Length: 356
Image (cartoon, rainbow, N blue to C red; front, side):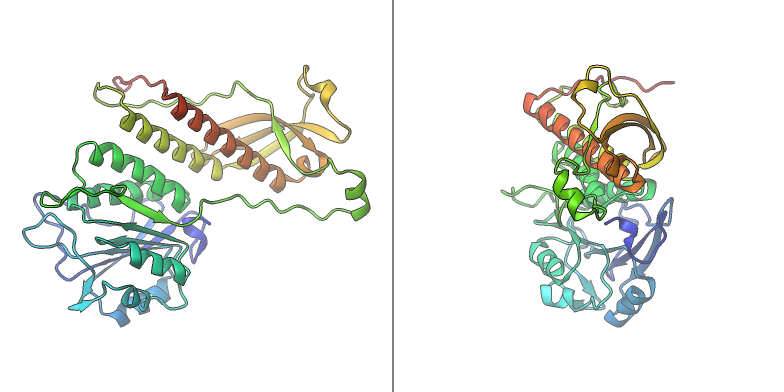
């Protein structure tokens, strides 16, 4: 389920942003960048609407994302509760009453103590809900929002992956510098920062119908594949000031890179496949019916990947099935790699100056 699954083309994502009545974007201490349409992101803004106005816009535009920002409290660093035209919407019942049959893919609640409200929206049928469990500062809210929307603007990404990138950025810049809580707040015991309700995405693999007799005679012909290219390399330039690579920094970088890789692979496309000889050291192990293909894919950002894979003819001569199996296998490989790196507490990075 991508951001664009409801009411928009594949290359665009629509956002309905709703601000409370005392919203202002000229806070000198925490200037909040203006929300405007850019890249893939199409933005519509409502300021202090009544319930009917919000519902009319929701029904007519069918946005992929609904972003609800709480009040900006005067002379305070905090983001407050949800109030429109002096109507308090800070209960689960009031919030769920705003949504009818038209439900967005994602709702982002930028309000404090939003766990119960998020759970109510998720139970109502909203697949993904982003929320804050405790109080937080305008600085933290601004940083996370900009990181999240930057991913949406620039890539055809799933809610899950866009959140992971933004959360990694938040942990890297806000938690390490202790800039996520208002100065008058007490320490929180739970995980600081935003949370996400929703299930990790899976790539659907629909098995073609096969003859029952053939299936009984060939139990091994399940449509799975094996990737043989062990020398595929992907390089990243990570720029930053010289510093000690501690566990928090490494963990944030690992999670952010993993999410970026997931975005690249989920958005990849199979462009060409040709028959190829099996790997010399593997040829003798192939069972009857296994074929080898050289597959060319382009990732979400148009990077090129060429892979040697083997599998049943049923899989390798079905382009969509082959593409989905390759995506699933690559995601599993990336996940295992990142897990091993974290377990070993070893991610080889070179922090230096960007190229001129």
